[in-house]
Length: 395
Ligand code: ADP
Image: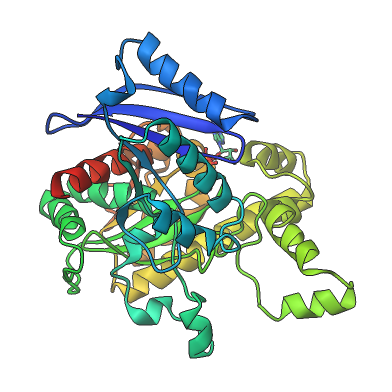
């Protein structure tokens, strides 16, 4: 069973092809295109690469194309990306303006090119379908809540990967298996009694922390939109809602100008004075740029803020996992986030941390740390392939 997982950006198409026939999924090949202006042509090139490489002889060899859509109105989970789902994504275009439009467009083109191949999406929100009501509710009128003004949570595929992998690393593959079954039996209730408590810290182009109780997402630091929570590369993160009407009046800003400022000029870019890549921010900070130092301080503060909140809500922690581009490649930042937490049983082995090779799975906690600390490279595409396979087997 070959499953193509396609990651659709506004000007990029990245893909991975998995063979999901056996118990362990196998990555057959991967590739991608940047600066895409003609999406149909990019999809053609992707299919040609698969054929020329001998991975498929025709499109018919693909059991499905899997996607990682962000959010749709009243729809979550792993679903067939039919017109009803695309309309529901259209209805939430404003919630994820950078993500929903390219996905809708890309899925439509894929469907047109391959009408008999199932198009299956695992929504980023689906990892949080069992989150407690108190964790998702904002204190707004019920009519706002009914419009979707609530915490949804994102990075679902990444945090789900960490949930399953951390359970295995902590010797609890029974929990990983339980999570898989929850997805099959949608509607089943997860176990609430603290059994395995993990915090997944995804720091990358966008960042979020998730509390994972018994393999299930309890809360994610992003909110109604992926613009909330930690400062993102150029998206604002946490902000008091009343700042918006204030600045609209003071600076006579339009809705579009506010959206632009908060989604394109905010986050680490705003704090550091124009840098949105951690490599540049760090270099600037080392050269004495105070704004860049502050950007790092805010990111560290916010990451610790959520870690602390989750530690308390789950009555402690068994595992703390760093993942994604920033967290996987910057030991000094991991060290800053874990500093002075020994009273909570969180203690880094500084040497192991500093010498951890980039891009590899490694434990970095001290021998006497109560909480096991890991770096685990995330694998969102694998999660999609697994769920698509499960979907095909059950439908
Ligand atoms: P995205 O969320 O877009 O997938 P990534 O998870 O790849 O992004 O994270 C991008 C971030 O990771 C950037 O801020 C970049 O500075 C940082 N990063 C990636 N590779 C490295 C590296 N080798 N050293 C330091 N930082 C890195």
